[in-house]
Image (cartoon, rainbow, N blue to C red; front, side):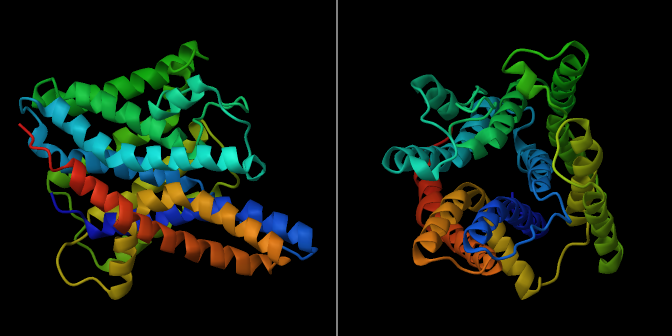
Length: 347
């Protein structure tokens, strides 16, 4: 099924938000070393880009898998598609992280993992890290642990009659959250899976159902922009980072409004050049999400050795370099790997 360009734009913006979140601590360190001033920008909770990703993921799984509902062998085909899409690049970045840790451990924020932690990371199984957090060896993979939960539940639901698939997925996710809220804290992995953020997948599925039933906001672009603006204002109204139900109440609601404005507008017409460029970056958003910490940390080390740089210049340079690295990684590794793994005939 063809992609929706506005969704790809939103994925690009969500990934850039995460980059902004991660680049600022390194810029602050450079400012401290050089004695210059740097004031981190906190007018948005930048990690809300993850919430946008989760709502988008719920939408895309329904939008792109409609032909699988009620189809024999759908569960296996769905899982194969998702594993081919997610696993190779994540395993490659995890391997790169382990290599960097072996060669120059001082640039990492964590100690050396043991074999069980590495295996759990590669299998997307929630485990305690060396720092005592529930996150994989390559810490950004915590979001993929949630994604894999969603994919597993969705695949299992595909064994049911078509009309029960989406209600079953929603009930399982809601049941995990309710159990953790009422009987928690639960042991791993259920305590991790039972966090309210998983409800954002269900919200995205709901948007896909509405769109599939013909919902379109046939209004001028300024009205859709206003809807997106309300979502941005919701994010701005929530100061700082956090977790739990505040994520659902603020970040999740904002993400739903942003995705709604992106997927329910009028279709047709040639998009502006800026939209096309962001849509192309949206195609590489997974690569951008996974590669940017390497770019930021590597650039920081080079700048420290060179004697420092103006922190705002570092932020701009690191973001530009992250985008370039993501586009190169997408074109040189991600897309060829997808073509290679998709050549196997599907029964």
